[in-house]
Image 1: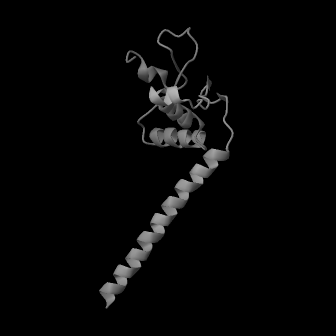
Image 2: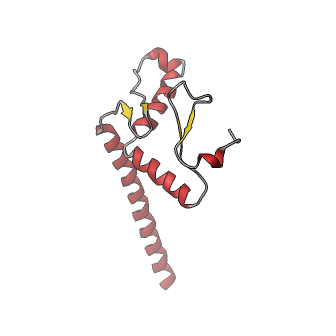
Image 3: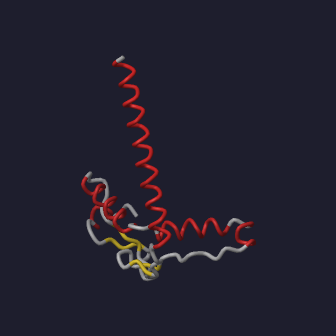
Length: 124
């Protein structure tokens, strides 16, 4: 009898966890639908991709999905928070120095380094 009860409890917990996961996915979907697109990322010093126009030609030649993917990754709700957490976790682990790519044509290889440049000398 005890074994059957544990199975039922486990099944209920699995169902609740699945529902929580789906609720999180739906929350991100709803937030992404209602958040306005930004034109520029101040933190990255670059312009962000805007929503592509849906046409039959762009769908057939595959360009729409490429543009849509780029737009979605640039306009994802909470994107800067996720970026900061990623960089912080990597810095905590000691595996990365913050590097940014410059939009200016003046840099020889298009890169600028704001912290820890000496660690990258001769590697790029």
